[in-house]
Amino acid sequence: MTQFVIHGGKKLQGEVEISGAKNAAVAILPAAFLVDGECRIENIPQISDVTLLLESMADMGAEIRTVNRTTMDIRCRGLSYREPGPAMGEIRASYYFIGALLGRFGQARVPMPGGCDIGVRPIDQHLKGMRAMGAEVSVEGGYVNAKARNGRLHGANIYLDVVSVGATMNIMLAAALAKGKTVIENAAREPHIVDLANFLNAMGADIRGAGTSVIRVFGADRLRGGAYTIIPDQIEAGTYLAAAAAAGGDVLVKGVIPKHLFSITAKLEEMGCEIIDMGDMVRIRRDGRLHTANVKTMPYPGFPTDMQPQIVTCLARAGGTSVVTEDVWDNRFKYVSELAKMGAKIQVDGKVAVIEGVERLSGATVKACDLRAGAAMVIAGLSAEGVTRVTEIHHIQRGYEDLVQKLRGLGADICEEEVSEEPESSKNLA
Ligand code: EPZ
Image (tube, rainbow, N blue to C red):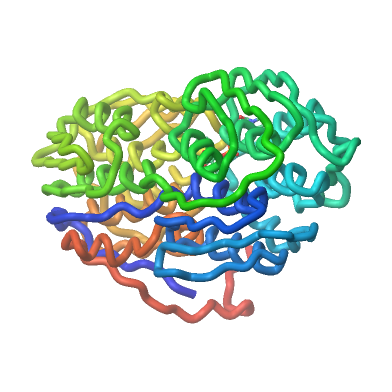
């Protein structure tokens, strides 16, 4: 078992390069199944969710050639239908195989998606979209089974009852090769939605309006292939900004699209950080105690839920009381009990956390409850006095490339440590 060991209290100083966006990559890679040709995909993040996806795609017959560390050529020409293995049930993004396989082959059998335990995570809106496009869909034995009634999906008008990133992208995938026009109303507007549309358009699709709440997909007969570069990861960038805000220092976050970060940088400015937009870089400087702030998570362009644990951790040491409302997921404050071990004073009532800033946090052994909560534990460790050990880091490795190396590059005292598993007999089973 590996854990992170952090000697906290050091200011961060230097530059960090941001990797490709996880939540774009996990949709764009399955989208390669829609392409009856070869696509070159650049800026693929080196994270475990991507490794799992690529392994599964290779098992399903995709020919994948590594060009360099972050670039792959994926060839799905003349492929016949194969379904993803049960390992895909471990990650959330497995649901994108439903849209991609249904679009290309008129059928899909995919394990129900896993992912972070942050509340009820239904996929009813995805399935509603597939049904509207002419698919028969059932959920049995932990699998989603879908089949296009006439062998090929047809266009449809689909209104999403909730603004869902996954449903918007999945319906785009399914509609790219459907017969006729699909309109998605009340669509999500996240940067990764625009990225998926740009990828599909680069392959020959005709998708208009991505980034607005109405997306129109004019189904193509074939996608021919091409080259595409994935956008930088908004949440990875935000996490390094939050780390600098919490630990203090002067950090240049490089290779970003500042517009995607606006809700985060605006909040950090409100909290007393100096933010300098430098085109494709953002510089953050922070000295002295952070100010309080109230935050409410919302779909883009609102404050992202995937930055909620990191911002709460920053506010845990602010000079006063802050209120953070989680308005996307119904159970995303589980990590608060871990922060409490370090001295944080946070009261949670349903979707609202009231954070009474303390002067200092002290190192402790804390666990990564999920991906972003894990990142928050690292941030807490960097800003705490003493030694923090973060366990269950496999959650963090799902979504952050080279976190330890990148933080060490900023002067943080963080390393990975191997520990032997506690023998079953010595565990306290009470
Ligand atoms: C994506 O999840 C991200 N995951 C999540 O990031 C992120 O938190 C979320 O979008 C919101 O931004 C991936 O991209 C793989 P949603 P997704 O569908 O698509 C409800 C991370 O840390 N809903 O936008 O699954 C749902 O319950 C992860 O990187 C329905 O009711 O989220 C939630 O309340 C964690 N029915 C809200 O909509 C549906 O069919 C938003 O969910 C779908 C969703």
